[in-house]
Image 1: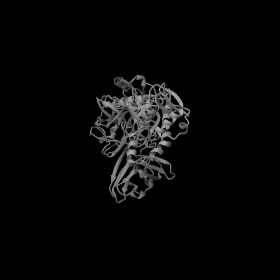
Image 2 (image 1 turned 90 degrees about the vertical axis):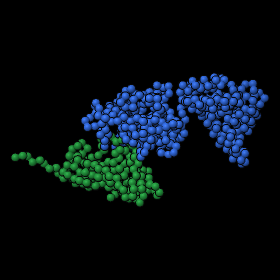
Image 3 (image 1 turned 180 degrees about the horizontal axis):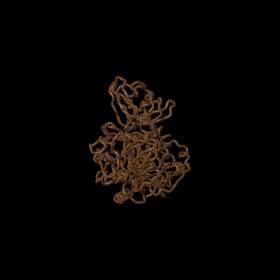
Image 4 (image 1 turned 45 degrees about the horizontal axis):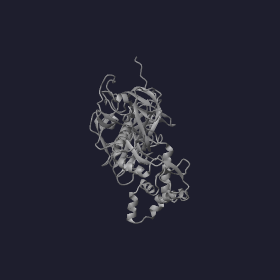
Length: 423
Length: 151
């Protein structure tokens, strides 16, 4: 699998922008009859490009190249009778694009392997069935590469796509299958976001917290948040959760695991203890969640989601000085070094002591409880370190329960937290 | 009964838009001995409507003790770990929230403070960065009594 060259994404975006900003917008404004409006709504850009291919034999695609020139690809031997000016005119008509360079025939011709009509026929046949494969994030006719393009989250999804291609009789070389992160709409950590990812705002009766991370526990799909983000800290009350706030269509799951705080070995006298402030909730039927993904904001302190972090490992050790990150609904993405490891921490106003917790010098505020804590690797993927539950009064230091503690047999037990196939 | 700061985002009211006059906060001495002062932070809904406050953190309250020159002497939450949760609390007209804190007349290092006058501030943390802060309450700390040696 390969990654998409950014310039192709750019040129296609620029082309679409030019088309819509110039002639296309004016054209649509002139259509007044209901019939014409309905016709316009039904047509996509791919339909317009197919119309060009009907008029220009061998047309394979159009895009702006890296120098801003209009590039048109043609299958060799299929378009010998038309001049550049005639090709330009046909494109201008089909796209209703009043572009002087098209009228003048000032276009760059490139060789294409596939006719756009052929690509579209394969695309229309393949797209509905390929989207049924879990982990497929997008399908496209890539005009610049003159290929179909299918984005997948991971290699397993890629293998299934290739099998579907073979079954449909579509040549392997006509399709680019590549890794593309799940596409999220422009939203903040406090908006409704599906599929569910770590770091989002959650609501349970009377309170707001942060969605920690997706997990599979004993074969049950769900998510982890803080134990004190349940109706009673310790013990199961079937706490209901909504994301971002309670509404008719925002119910996401129910608490099913939250071990009791007890007097145990190592617990100070007169206190009750656990090794983690964590609870597990089962996802409600029909709610989508991306296992192994956390929301990534556009920058530290911003709440606007700009993509995802992918969990590919769980921390097996923690070292003072390591730089960790968290994503939470109140202060977003913050980062800082571990300042203390394996500290027994008394929880203010309670008899609870949390055993062997870590401190990180980074911004925190009320509402961040349940935030995923992680380390960013050199390739951008992340290692999950734990779950944030507390902070100091000045909001400069947070405390988290390490992932190893969370998965102890006397805590939540074994969890699957990584993106499919990554660990 | 004084209100110094209220950020609007942390207060919801059914019907009319809330105003800073809707809530009042004050801190009072409930009991004073030679060794400690029991303080009470009170937040009251002065509006004619039910209000919903968003409290920031558990516990959401804090108390600061300062010298008359503004130097911080003691903070109740200092060194404590607060659960980072947001809580909705509904307050009917005239209803109050009350929080108690004991100051054992010590500074941040746990040493007995010198006799004199101190200023006490009560704080209620709301949806960050909102806070509700009382006007300072003046309290007087008397000299510590010395134990008489037995004859």
